[in-house]
Amino acid sequence: MLKNLRLLRVRAGLSQKQLAEIINVSQQSINKYENHEVEPTLETLGVIADYFDTSIDFLVGRTELESKIEEVHELDLNAEEAKLITNYRALSKKEKNSVQLLAESLIEK
Image 1 (tube, rainbow, N blue to C red):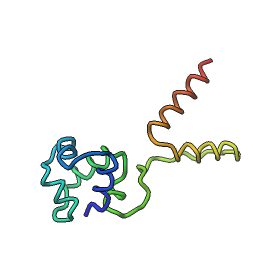
Image 2 (tube, one colour):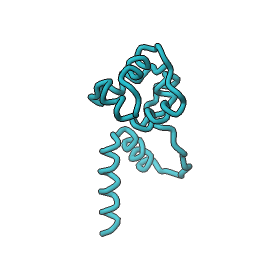
Image 3 (tube, one colour):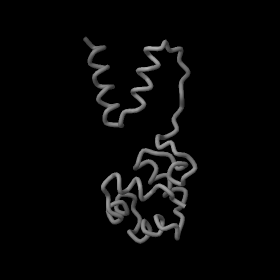
């Protein structure tokens, strides 16, 4: 059951038909996924999760964490660095890209 599919689709401003075209399924399939009538294949779950930059666990309602699960590198951070990381994690993907570009340009000076 795709508990959060409708939430993600509506938030992205997509119709069922638009999402269906993006992930290469029928509009009827999206409707059935959202109404818990049919479950998608594991491959389709992966495509949907990748498109919305989330995890399959979030899609099916096993977690409230929307972000993808990524490999974490252990670092020794002071309080200022830890605060910077916490703030960075709260940004959208677009905002994170902007911060990364800014940091790279500052380093190149």
